[in-house]
Image (cartoon, rainbow, N blue to C red; front, side):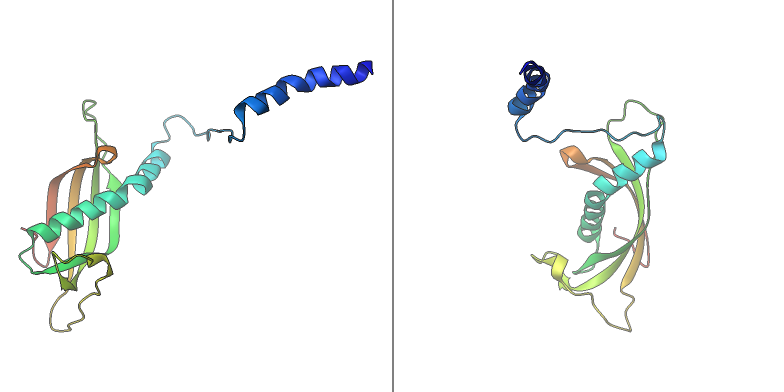
Length: 154
């Protein structure tokens, strides 16, 4: 009986803790060498690049003289610009994107589901380089640079 009481006293703090915490998951933090910027940049790109690409495409379609909308075919290259200026709060992304012309007009409702235009006599593919300054957690974007081959968005 005495051994049993000891066992209960030992288990009691853990049992009480589990009851107080309830069915919560314990959070563990991944270990990464300090200064491992490449891995950190990759995580930032994976998290925020889709929104930045969407913004760049939106700006291209707004500025384009073409009545048809363009969609992203693929991201050719992308990277996070490293800034030495500590007062910058946002992130600066650079990317090279390939767009293709769609059958839809640029102000149509559902451009995401619009098929690409397949006309052999017209060059429907455009490659553009963009640099965007952003605070994606605030949904604030600023286009710093856009340069396109096969026509410009301006």
